[in-house]
Image 1 (cartoon, rainbow, N blue to C red):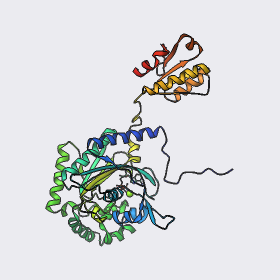
Image 2: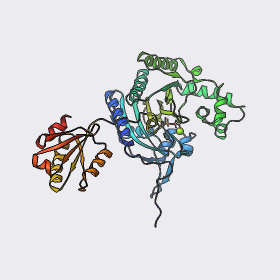
Image 3: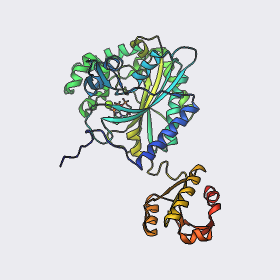
Image 4: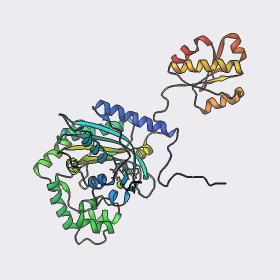
Length: 416
Ligand code: ATP
Ligand code: MG
């Protein structure tokens, strides 16, 4: 016998009832996006490798070792997207979405691919909700984007969490900071192999290292805030002031950087309390220079990505459940089945979720099935009911039963 084929390591099936929770999160996000004026983009999962190499930066973990890259049959080098922002910008520039006045507000949902070591909260295919606002460098926009993120997280009942905020400054501030950090790191012993290289190639990346020893060394490292010029500092302070005004609790995280090279000024992350090592459920920031990097105009922008897989781990078990009732129709005998089927369609037309079993099973078997399907009510129709023109309506939670005229059933059920 042939062996069973299994899913690829780090890639998993998300099954019901779990998918119901995912739908609830995505619904809440879509509603919040609509309130804030965002429109959805649906983008390809495959892009030219060059897009990510240019956008994300050659010395990042993502480009260096995490991308799923392969030549297609024609020999073009393609990559399964490891993140969405580069693709969004590619699409914006290619389709001229940046034209015209005003901030362009876009969101997209879907899977991302990174060849990482699979573990709790870390998969090779994972899912993000991405928000991108393009065309303004105003600190109000930074604040608005963070407010939107926090609103989504609140809507899905995320419990204890911390919002960490930093400013990475403009490229000039960053260059000075990198020099200062490079100097600090130059004679530090015991940095991991990657960081020994990065301290000269891209010292900012060292701040993002997960190794415990590197983190220890970094405790005394210089902080970005001390390197911000007056404009960047004013921008940062205004963002913080606005967050305070709207009651958003934040912590300044002076060494927070993002895993991608393109961030400028505001950077932020939300960590969920109690998630363990992989505790960041969302991250984002400004990327003012990215459009130019991709051959486009000067297009200051800011965005965030929510990691749905990790978020699910900490959301309430029953999220999105219990809205809408469900009816099961138990039919006994062919005539009853025929009538129940018509009734079922009538119910569905009236917006009531209903199911039945076509297998001509015993009443007991059908009641078991109704329970398993989570029915709130069961309607029992047998020969006796057909004769009297009344069905038995049973409330599953209590076992209460009542007789209801068949002709009135749709109305009664719709009103329950
Ligand atoms: P980490 O530091 O945990 O590797 P990151 O900085 O690489 O995160 P981002 O690129 O900012 O992550 O992506 C935003 C969010 O996407 C993260 O906060 C996280 O919730 C989620 N995420 C990133 N990588 C993975 C993964 N491999 N599996 C599951 N979720 C992920
Ligand atoms: Mg990562």
